[in-house]
Length: 77
Image 1 (cartoon, rainbow, N blue to C red):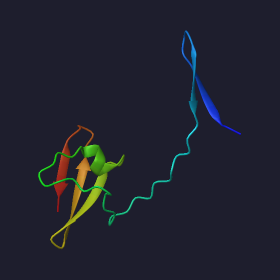
Image 2 (cartoon, rainbow, N blue to C red):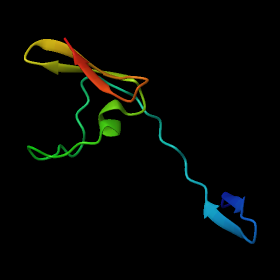
Image 3 (spheres, one colour):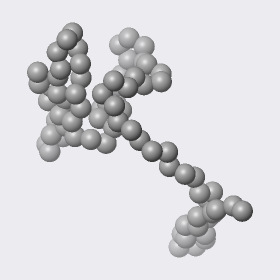
Image 4 (tube, rainbow, N blue to C red):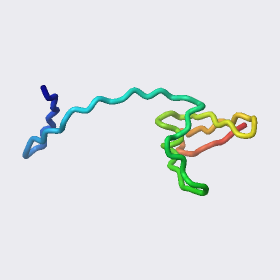
């Protein structure tokens, strides 16, 4: 039995196979499966993962990276 989802466009219908969405379990100690090379460009969305704030541990201290309503990033100790 195959589950399919249809999306209707104004002129045609297109069928896409339904895919289960894996659960997300955020963790402060999680390390991405592929760590970018030194000096790599990271997208802020990859760091924040849909939240407005993330905690970063560095040198025994914890820092807070916040995404503001004005679309700015603020890093505080």
